[in-house]
Image 1: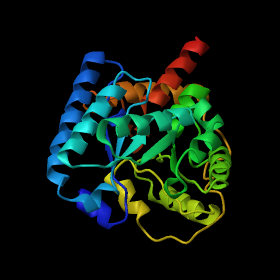
Image 2: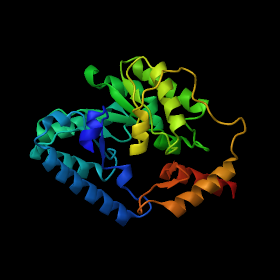
Image 3: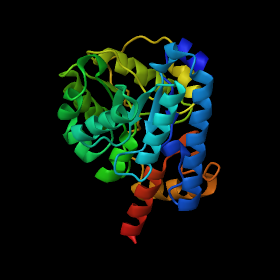
Amino acid sequence: MLERLLRDGHRPILDLEDSVSCIFDPVRNEDLKHKARLGLLRLAEVLKDRPQLHDRLLVRINQRDSPHHALDLDVMTKCHDIGFAPGILLSKTHRARDLLDCKNDLFLRTGKVATVVPIIESVEGLHSLETIVTAMPPEDRVAVFGYFDYALEAGHWPMMKQTEAAYWQLFGSARSRAERHDCALINSPHASWQKEDELSRIKSYLLATGRLPTGMCSVGSHQTSVLMRDVEPNASSPDMQSPLPECPQVRASWVVAQFEAARCHQRSFAVADQYFVTPHEYQLAKRYLQQQG
């Protein structure tokens, strides 16, 4: 799979964070994290003799104030010892110091300067965007926008969708700020799992509106295949919502019901009606319903 993704121009992310978590079961969560780190070490043995692939791979590690962060750095050090040296995708980069400390920590452990790509997914991180990107070497200035975590902290309910103009106002503002410092900002995944028309319109808009090369995160092979298709750039906003907004209470009840009924393999997400229900949206929905009494 990695060979194919790399050949098609993707940048695969090997995840030690959200996709291997179960935030509502601490024991299960620890087990998933441990297994993911062991899996990364097994992959390191497979890829150690393929250094030409390493620069295109990223390992997403847990944020610096997480108890898992030090364990993730331990396993990254072991990967380097084996001969596998991918870049790092740093979750919840709140400030430039987070990025610099992570890079310095790994350098002290391995003697090598690693590429560290920040995920901007907190209120503080978005506020500090300029200082974060200017702390990166000019040739490495790429950052990822993580809307799900940002929405949870900012209290967005209902969550913005990438079929709404409000989302593109938020992302467009952040993207413009990053691009003023020659940093490409990668768009969040689209939560509608298999809606090809929406994905194509989003890609068209991203291609037409940025000054720098663009990108978008994918949450599955189907999304990846759709995003690989050729489209014409189109600067018209991919706003496809009906004029009548969905009732916030109805939406919250649906999210809670679907998440609790369809959680995938005891992990902290669900897929329902071709929609990716994240734990962030679930927590926001629960909070909203509790506030409504």
